[in-house]
Image (cartoon, rainbow, N blue to C red; front, side):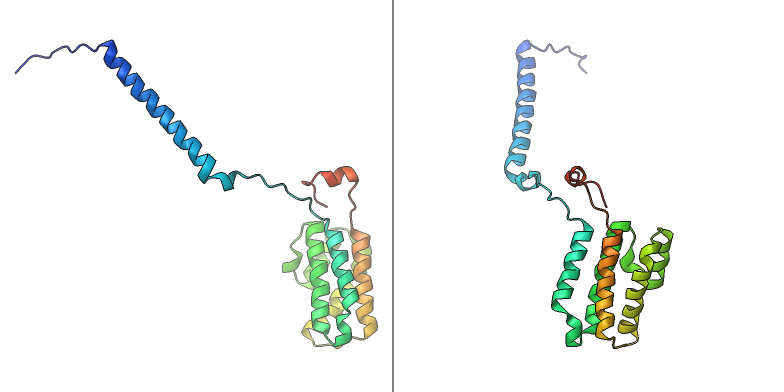
Length: 176
């Protein structure tokens, strides 16, 4: 058995090791740079977010379309009241941050009472009451009831809306 030998390392060998490490780091950096430049290019794109339209504007536009179409004149009572209540439920959900689409009419009215919207409750009670009878009990409402429900929906949205000032409109993180 031979004894342990001391091997001397020369500066030339140390230089080769440092050169290999340095070239490996540069090659790794180039690979990462090329990956992000060519392959991940789509993922890096920054998309400008359009300012969100206030919920009361959307609700009033939908109510305006219902008023123009007047589906109750064609006998489409169920579709009309479904669209009317869905519009109000989406508006209420965004305006008051509640899950109005998943609530029954009674639950929604209780929730609105808890939110101190007592002035607007009567309007909502009329709309939801007639709507429930039309959708579930197959009631055929009069034209006056249809028009009254639409007018009450307009009044409800206008009474409960929160208009943003121009400064607040610039801040898209704020909610109504």
